[in-house]
Image 1: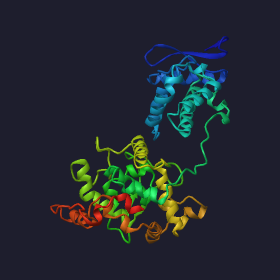
Image 2: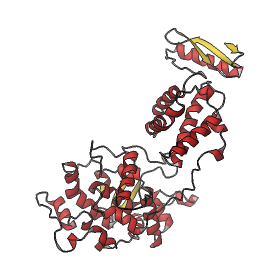
Image 3: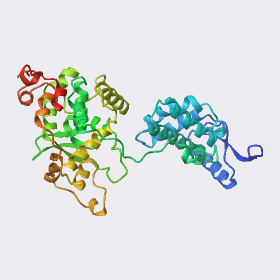
Image 4: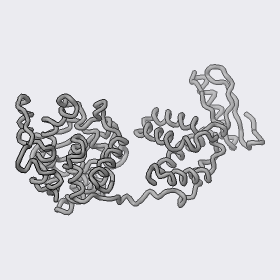
Length: 409
């Protein structure tokens, strides 16, 4: 172990598991440097390949790769998505810079550049800075740098995380996303699921046909236990991490029967199977990704002339509309979040009829919604599931030929 007067830090030298000499920066604390050297020798003795390059001269991109590998190894839910965000937005700006040369001012300039480009939202910029901070925590842990430059960046120089209020679709705006024929059939089902259940977009994309139990009474049920491609729920380590059962609104039940009876096969070329996602990616039948769902929502909102309030806007609408019509907040919370309010809520499990009553408070005029959502008769959709040989007839004539948007005016 030596002390580098120029860098003002200790360096440890050791042979790795393959007998090669390695030099690693060990920080300014002598005792910590001794502990690091002891740990590296112990790893080498056990035959563990030590391939770290913990040096201030190591490029941020190199550390980002190791950080991603570590995040994946310990099972972090969003490891791939966060690394993808890093490569798209951060790497091209400071990825080739040595970690020892990145200062708080560089982090501030990174934030300002991302905001000025306008390619991502302020919240996404904040998330990118958070990813950089997580990478530097690994660099600090391994002794490549002494401090995390993100932690020293003035908070007022970074984008605000916001109050979490967000924007909520009005009833007509939300309904337009569900029934406008200019939007693809499959995506209207996605919006209908959010409209009637208040699920997050990841929870919506992650639902499979076997999660739906139409025989439950008084309303059918939808099991929400994962998001996207069987990933843990968003709040996997907090109070609403456990799975929940969501009542299926009577109008959503009609949508699902029609979609299962005809729509799914029309879009995907075959009937649905129990393990299929209810609305999979048409390219590969896998779950839709967050990027796909978010971009599609933006395109569809622009297509029909609506302000893009984000997929969460439908979730906010459902909760707001149900509460406005008399749904109890504490009951509704167990449907959309799982109870996490007062201590007593942790010990409260509402019976199924109470949950169904809360969902039924979301009032929708049946004349504006049922089979007309997809120009398919609901009654025949149901019978199609009972008798697959019976053909479906499309609405033709009468009210069925009206434009769907006129139904919400």
